[in-house]
Amino acid sequence: MDKHAIAAVLAEIGTLLELQGENPFRARAFYGAARVIEGLSGDVAELVRTGELAKIKGIGPATAEVARELVETGVSTMHRELREATPAGLFEVLEVPGLGARRIHTLHRELGIASLDDLERAAVEGRIAGLAGFGVKTQEKILEGVAFLRSVAGRRRWPDAHAVAVSVVELLGRVPGARRVEVVGGLRRLLETVDRVEILVETEHASPVLAALESLPGVAEVRRAGDVAATARLAEGAMLAVSCAAPGSFAAALLHATGSEEHWAALVERAASLGMQLTPGGLLRDGAPVAAEDEAALYAALELTFVPPELREGRGELEAAAAGALPRLVAYEDLRGCFHCHTTYSDGRATLREMAEAALARGWRYLGIADHSRAAAYAGGLSPDDVRRQHEEIDAWNEERGHELWIFKGIEADILPDGRLDYADGDEEVLASMDYVVGSVHSSFGLSQAEQTERVLRALENPYLTFLGHPTGRLLLSRRGYAIDLDAVIDAAAERGVAIEINANPYRLDMDWRYWREARAKGVRTAINPDAHSIDGLDDVRYGVGVARKGWLGVEDVVNAWGLEEVKAFFGRKRRG
DNA sequence: GCCGTTTTCGGCCCGACTGTTTTCAGTCG
Image (cartoon, rainbow, N blue to C red; front, side, top):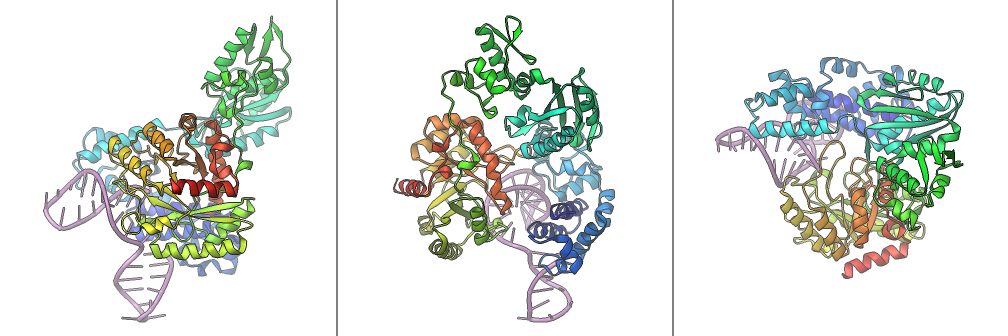
């Protein structure tokens, strides 16, 4: 059992305690212990054996005992007992925005609510508004929340779905006769969320491949769809779809299975216009197959340059491919740093030095630190004194090792409800001392669209603002973004020379790829920022690269794909306005 | 439950917002 699994159990114990109506501080102790263990670099099992674990700050007798039991037996008695005493449906109720463990405990105690269905029924019947501490507005908000959760049911974020796909690929790859196993569909196109995991297998014999599905852990309800395809239901409701293709038709099948539907339909139409017929079984001319050993050959036969899977969304990519005008997309290897990560100065888990070493280990040339600003008190936002201390540490690093990795001084400044940047009122020298500023909305999500837009537009006017952080505040599959007129924000960002971040956290991926072609056309730049709160978090930039590629962005559009001197010049230019 | 002492109980990241109240609990970031 590794540290991630132990931390997950400890955190779930915390949640279960809250749902039981326990002292919230007791629950917090378990969350805290989970965080500590997650951040350990040594071997947890070894720390348990030697008794060193219990000596670490944040780990006490109770949490150490859970860890010990997990390491030795793989299960925790406390965890099991709490699970038995708590309806599993309460976990989904916890997802409803505005409902915390405390009120869920009340709903469970007073109305017997134990699932999302129970909750919806009680709200529809008006029973929630009658409870002490609840009212009509809360009841309405609950119904909205339930509707949102229903609308995303069965969907998964890319990393979760991809992890499932990888394990399926591994299993099917071991089936005799399976020559190639590929992840296809929305996952291959790097969509931020998918409702199904799609796999294509190249084989002469579909039967053993489909039979192997039955033995996959966590898979239920396997259904055959003809002789060469099957679907199955995965734990938590997501779907798995596996199809097989013979070697001779694999390239066309891959193209078809990758989609999108719109892209495929456009390809079929283009084939027809060239006197050919494109089918999932292959490309035909006068009824005879046109030889094409891979996708690139198929595109070539259709007189197109190869279209990367990320661009196959039916948004003009065929016209561009026909004209040889597809962009050279930015790639992970192009990145030379990033500008939005946190350290122990605010709510990050790693020190500034550790983050810097991690950036070096990734082959980066620079790193921008942007801890939370003072207004984000919950996240340990920095006072002007903290900022000074941090800048001294950065100066010392740059003097000593700036030739290896240059550290930029940044801050993630809260955009206050009236559109001012944090520190702007009286402590402007804090903003002036930065190389760059990321401005983010972290409060007052409930403003009207007009007010929220006005707020962000005002922040864009601030000469210190370099990047707009996560511009909609969405959390994929759990929270809609706040209401905001993104087109107006893009226009203003273009005019003011403010770059808009691609927040690469896989829960955010904000701003959405669908807006980037328009933004790019208007001259808006971006930075692919991990919003990392730990060393591992730096690697989230990979997801952000996916967003940039889906948004047709190239190296010239992505500031953290530029060289050090170019970045310095960019920051200086922005500051001078 | 964990921490840290002016050591063995009192406080726990903290301020704003919302909806419920009529002074505040719950939620959120």
